[in-house]
Length: 306
Image 1 (tube, helix red, strand yellow):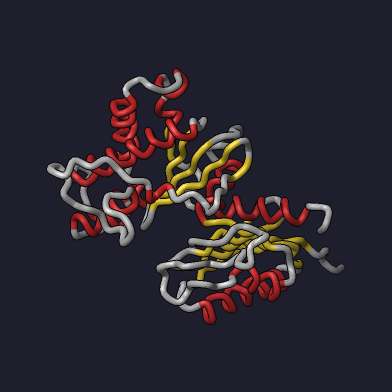
Image 2: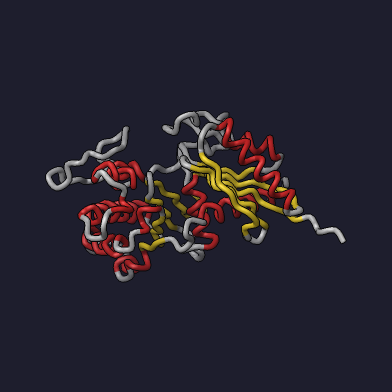
């Protein structure tokens, strides 16, 4: 007896180092996963296309939609001539790459397209720390720093997606004379507190620094200042932190302590009385972007046109 044809989503987290691919069913189960190095578009994109084609065929199904959560900057505006493009990125070879158009043509499915951090933020809403929330912020602290902002159950977009990592930080230049590693700004959050900044400042990756190293006090201070700024600007119900830097267990309690000191009582009672529930770590262990972009792709497929 023949096996019934299944419906699958091609979920892609397109990162600056590797493209994480997951063939998903409509119940958010991972059917098969793979990853491909981010080399040249001419090499990486066809490899991802072939993976999804072969995976769907091997598991007796068909692709009905695709979701892409991409590194950027990207153009998210459907009316733009460059919609779906990775635009002027510092990643060599990838500027002006029509990533969304490539997969739409090659796989012949509707494609939901977002930034990598927006995909992760939506994943928190679907299955993570923001399941019951309408207004929250997800921040990834890794090689860079970025944020996905959800207000009134929708991802925030202005003239471009928000760039929380490039907010300027107050800095005591006697205590901290490191100007940062950002090529665009002196003293921005990403330049001072990203994983890349930790390595540039101390000469070694953060994963090799012990828990009592002064790097973590400085890191906690900058991330707490970020949380204060986001609290005052957007009044979210929760701030969710993810990314490789946040894997250091001692960091979150330090952020809570500095946040309480810096905000100095000037916040809603629900924030001040329960800081440990207000600033939290993601529970999704690196799966947030895949989950989020799968949901966005399903939503697109279910629209009347499809």
